[in-house]
Image (cartoon, rainbow, N blue to C red):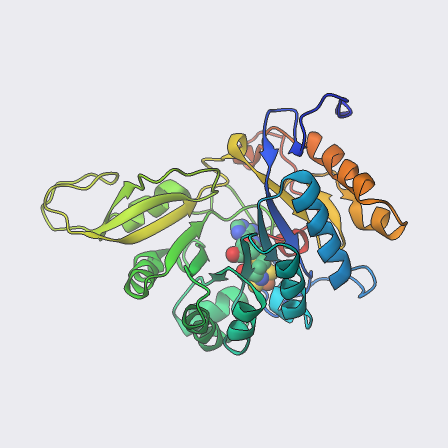
Length: 362
Ligand code: SAM
Ligand code: SF4
């Protein structure tokens, strides 16, 4: 049983290991219109009832407690798919009106974004991340189990045109499916000025099909990209960001530069690429995230097995201070690390959480 938070614990969302969460990921819904193989089963999941999911007013109140009482400095809206929420624009407008300077970003699969990008910008959304794993119709459909590539591409372009940049693209690589496409995805993103980030596949799929041996590691991603490009560490501070960023230059034949550094003959910086190596190069020691699921549960880590009910307390009529205290208690017991890099290698200390990524809020 982890120790209770002591009376002299630091202010804000502190934990036992000296970290403080300032980056809030809030899930607006567990529903989604895609069925990505690394996230959802083909048949979907049993969706939460409307009553179980946080209302717009409840979301606005929880964010206010996080920002005003607990030092949250950045908000990311996620899901499930945030765009399926009919009141999305109203929620963002209310959040913006309470917090004029808060960076508010959103992670989306991009389906329907072309129709909503302008309204999202007008409501006060700062920036957007779109998930895009392939530029080939067939591969995209195989990965997401839906033939919506054109709609996603239209969404990405509309987001950029609406001023929701810098547009970041998230790609999960799956062995034998889209891993060989990684340099093409990077070229496409660089061409358009989008920042591509590759995310190592984590054991958060509802089908429990993940294996450590089969996932594409950050080292493999760097090596796949290094055939055409030279990657050098981005000199800007990482500052708690999950992605390790690299400056990208085109590799010039015979330049002799290694995988992690540019040589004198390599060309100018074309842009950056990020790699989120949650499995093989975990960044738990610098983690600044706190998560709220669509039904208002606090999760201190994607891999927490313990959840704390914030929405239930709110619905019982709790004060802002009581909500803040429950949140602080939940974060105090945040695990030191997730330990998933041992999975499948014989160690028994990692158990895949019951919730899949869509039900947590990635
Ligand atoms: N539906 C939206 C989307 O796909 O962008 C937002 C929610 S989704 C859960 C957030 C991010 O989690 C996406 O970029 C997705 O690729 C990523 N994701 C989902 N399952 C994952 C897994 N098993 N491992 C790594 N990333 C995953
Ligand atoms: Fe839906 Fe996003 Fe999960 Fe894909 S990754 S199934 S788009 S929630």
